[in-house]
Every structure is written in structure tokens, then in C-alpha cells.
Image (tube, rainbow, N blue to C red; front, top):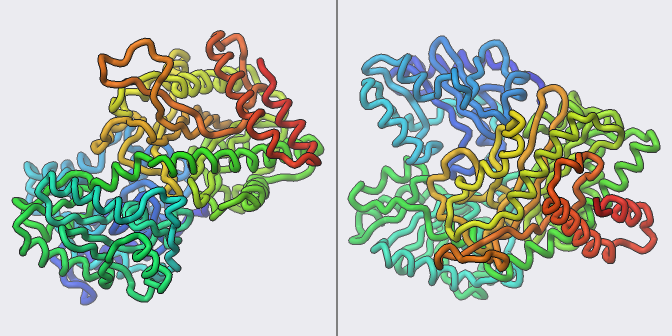
Length: 615
């Protein structure tokens, strides 16, 4: 957790700009200014220069929205971040706990507090059309006016704003990508034709990387680069800083049988405006794209569905699916090396902290074939820090890992052939009966989800409560989703589907070769956190007696390979079926990983055998 930042000075300067009296920017006075967490590409993870909400609030979590008026500064964030926000917000800020029954939503608060004619400012580059429309319709009856402010006001008060990153862009060989760009282009154009769309706008960075078989490192842990793409019935236009297109990339496009026209990054606006005016067909622009881009297309010409690339990317091709399985095997070797080492250090009373532990795990991973870095900052939480759902260990919060309390480790890596994300929870001493009860109920939900049979194309949201049932039976719950999609050497969180309590408006339904996480948990503030997370692949269910009347029966196959801590299990709470499923999983973990461990590595080998004993 980062230290509390002092935000008073920046807020004062921002309020002068909002008053409309500053010579720096000419705007009509604003009642409120909204600062979302997004960048212009509406991604979950953003570069340092785009962390405007973090700069103005001091709160560094990945999700949240700030609203500033002349006399109030409010931050809305969700349950994953309540603890973190309480620690990081200074006296200028009020925390609004989103989703709590007695807390007004951002929209409700603005509706209640703004007067007829009040202007609410926002940078339309940072607001998706979906979010923009939701707000606009909410204000229809209040007389408040949602206003696009051309210049970003935070940028004007952020003196040391980092530069826009422009790191090298690398090519991804078809042996990892599984499809040539020309094949993906053909598929995209077929989908466009079916909708009478002559122009497709692609703004999501992971969709662009996926489509062009390119990767980058402009955003930490996310192998993406800043660009836009427009596909027409004749051309592929790539909007990027031209100096980034190397001879190797030119050659890559030739190998992929595709002609790509390079334009400057910010030429997207003028080019889209021209194409939208000239085309006699539809312009396909997702409602997750920025309002400033959508605004360039007249309403009658818009086709506002998620892009075809969004679903193509989520359904892995056979090469990508095999790569995901393979990289999880190598990742499994690194995980058992780390956890065996860690337990040995703790038992021998040698000091390991959350940070030094995470560093050691990264070292083990870095020795594996095709390793390209971590897929997110490791969540290494001991005792009470484990109860902070998206905890990030810092020097001032770094705790020792001991045999006196639980240890939660959520980590992942990027490999050329896939992306991993796994959580395990341990206790190297004597867990309490209550800790074991909670752990076992999380495990029961995790096993239930991992072995579920469900109809083809069912929405992920329909599955969520099945993972929570055993916690609910006990009056417990967790404040996050149960499953997110995951990229293939791409973003660790990937849409458009997911499994959670919230709505996934673009979920096309769960389908074969989608990969998701399966991660129920339980957190007791200030005491401990439990999460068990695997990555699962959707496969056809061969063990279903029926086939949902021809719709198709699907199930999950777990690709993560790492023991689940049996010491934390109250065995009497498991059914015979659950025990068998867990024992079979542990046998597969042992049989797969043991032959890959060095014959001289007796520490890891013995640990793996011990941790995968049947119960």
C-alpha cells in the first residue's frame, strides 16, 4: 500500500480551472468534474501518464471514479478496495463505498446535488459511449448537462505527469498466434459484411495486438502498445507513432499476407470523421469505445456492438489453447519450487517477507521457457494483508511470512504461448478451526465451479452463485467476481465474458475454448484472506447424460497445476465426490510436474509428493 498523498494543492488548482476564471483554459463554469480510471482506450490497466484519478485522489487501486465540486471531493470504489482507499485518501476526500446498501451511487449523488443548468464536465476521450449514455440519460430529468471538456483538466494541474510510453513493438510468430493476420482479417470482413459495415473502429489495445499478431510493453505486465486500428472493406489502417514500425514489423506484415497503412496515432480523429462521412455503409464502433470517437459518426450510421475481434480473441484457436495448457505446466513447476522453498525457509526460521517472497517466485518463473515477464504485480499477503483483496506489498507494509498466520499468494506470468494467473493460500503452522472452516467452504465452491456441467452459451453471470453457495450457507461471502477471461500472451483480465454478480453486457455466452479463472475467496478484515484460483478451459462435457436438448453440454477443465493446501481442509465437510475430485486433481498435478523437476531437487520433489497425498 502506498503512503497517503497530499492532494489539497492540486484540488485547489483544479477548482480554479472549473470556475471558468482561469486563463489556462476557456470553459464555462462546471458544477462538478468527473475523473474516471480509464485511458483513451478504456482498458482496465493503464500507463503511468494516464493514472489521473490516482494522481488527484492519492488512491492507487485499479478501479474507482472521482467527482470534484467546489466544496467536495468524493471517490467511488468497490469492495476490493475499501481498505486500501481508507488508508490512502487524505482529509480532502470522502470514500463512497460502491455497492453498499446505504451509499448513493455516483449518478444518484449527482442527481441529488446538482441544480437545473449545472454543467458536469468530463473528458470524453476517457469515457466510453456506454458510460456516457448512462450518465446522460440519468440527468435528463434533472436539467444537469453532461459536458465534454476538450482539454483534460487533470493534465493541466499535474506538473510531473509522466510521458506517453513508446516502447518497442515485437512480432508474434504464427506458431504461437495460431492464425495469420490475413485469416483474422477475412473473418472480420465477413462479420462486417453481415452487418453492412464498411468501416470497423478498433480501440481496445489487446484487440489490436491480437489482430495484428504484435505485442508491446507500453503498459506494465500487459503486452500491448498504444495504437488504433480502422478496418475498411479495402484497407487496414494502423494509427501509431510511425517511428515504432521497424523493418521487422514490415516483414511480419508481408509474412502474414496483409497490407497495413501506417498513420500517426492522433490522426484517428480526422480519418474516422472523413470515413464516416463518406461511407454509404455502417460504421461499426463498439459502445466500449470513447465517446469522443463515437461522436464523429452520425447516429444513423453507427453499428454499436462489440467488435468481432473481442469474441475471436476470447475463443482461443487450437494453437493458443495448446499454448495455454503448456505454459501452465511450466508455471506449475515454478510455483511448486517457490512454495516448497518458502515452507522450508519459514520452518527453519529464516526471514522471508511478502516482497522478498514475491521476488523469489519471479526468479523461479524467469528460468522457464518462453517467459516474458509477470502478468500483474504479485499479490503476496501475510496475515491481515491477505484480507486486502488487491493488495500490493510496499516497503511500508511489508510483513514477514511466518508459521503464525495465513499467507495468500496471487500471481501470474506472461509466456510467448500464454498467460497464467493462480492463487494459493497456505498456513505453515497451526490454522484455527474457524480458518479451516472458511477455507473448506471456499474450496467446496471452487470444486463445484470447476466440475460444473452447463449449457453451451449460458451467460457467465448465471453460474456465479453456485461458487458462493457453501459460504452463503454459513453466512459468509466475498466482494469480487468468481471468474474473468484471460488472454493468450495478452491481458490477464480479458472480456467480454465473466462470472460474477455484476452484469456483463457484452457476454456472448460461454463457449468451448474460452479460458476463465475460477476464484472464490473469503476475507476477514485485519485478520486473513483466502482465495483459491485456477485457470479453467471450457470443453465439451463428455460426462453429461443429456445434451440440453441439442444445445450442447459444456464443462471446465482445470489447466492450473499446483497443490491446494490440504492442511487447511476440514475433511469431514467434503463429500465423497469432492474428495475424489480433489484427489484426482492432486494426482494429475504430481504425475505432470514430478518428471519435470530436477532429479537433484529433493526439496521440491518431496514437498510435491507430500502436498499431493490423497485425503
